[in-house]
Image (spheres, protein in one colour):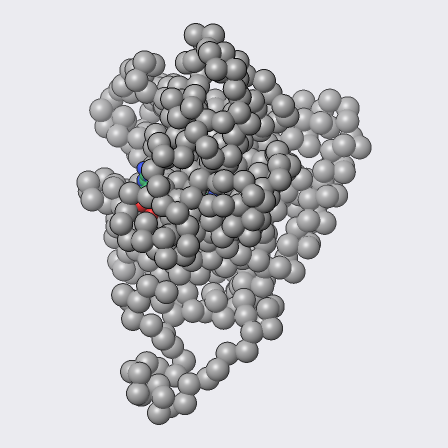
Length: 499
Ligand code: NAI
């Protein structure tokens, strides 16, 4: 049985079902993928070389909630190489690569029968109760204690702890309003209600011991700033997303790569000539537009922000409202980090075979709940084509739309997310943030607020990735440096510079 294991990944379920060869081949694949990825992740490997001997994170308990992919596996093994005691979950039910998960659980020197890696609780295709079970498991160490620090992506781990503390203080968990609240919220409330009885005081003690969180993505960062504003943040937070070497690279070039990868792997539709609508022209939207245009799509943008709308127009994209184009476009992608972008009525008006997907963090950009309601009433029929690719047929019109990854981030649901090189920049920032939080934990430098890393570290992260691309930097002369008013060795830009 897999119940006695200190982790839960797909390969060990296969093993328990007598499918040893399949389990072994997942493990072999994962380790080979990791080795290849290490070559493409120079920032992380440089940190291992720089800090590996001193082990600055020795014994630090780090809990991570971030897509359990091959690239994340290299991040995990970097934190481990720096001495950290790590536990991990994915931050999305579809984003785990089962090969990477087992490679991390077994570790570089272990075997299937003698796993020596770290406890990871993640597999591709979790249910929502399983997802929150995993998060809860990873937050508690075998001695009953919680983490010292968190690596979060989207803020689910941080949110769970904060809600736990709130309800412990109130002495009760509120009732679930199934009519008006999303199904997932019901799952979270049930877990917290259970914990309130079984482990009273657990979340308050856990929050007290946490020295900080480093947050990966736009949506998670937005949640943190909301908590900060309401004076509800219970520990320091570092906003990794807004490092220039994160948002202006991962969000843009990462999505440029992985958006079409997801659409292709799921649908294999010819994109050239088709009309694609991208909702949102922020960092992710900009990368998605480039990606679709590169395939020969005629790209239309929707925006609410006049600056981003003007940017899109100046890049040569048409800017319209969704209502203008909903009946004529072939591909729809939401990138807003906002809710209710494409609703069931929109999908009712789409062309037959229209492809609909979301690349923003949460699945509420597309009204899946509305589709499910129509399904219950008999107006919509769902046909599963393959995992993470479904056809929804409307009875009254006879047309169908094709939904990617059930409205969850399609680049991680239908493909394998961003490639290693760009994630190296993101995760080098994550590692620097973890080092910073631990190093400064007793200095009082970080209160219960949201911080960004200093610019010299951002430049350092970029510097670590130049060699791999054969980039040669020009060096300022002292007199040039004096003329523009910067040090020869940087930082080169002011805080208000926007890149
Ligand atoms: P952003 O804030 O730069 O861009 C979002 C844009 O959407 C903004 O320009 C905003 O004005 C626009 N927008 C908001 N409501 C809208 C509406 N109703 N209609 C049209 N446009 C609207 O944020 P960023 O960095 O582009 O991130 C977007 C989302 O993608 C976030 O949820 C983020 O967490 C997620 N993300 C996903 C990644 C992935 O690999 N799938 C990678 C990085 C970020």
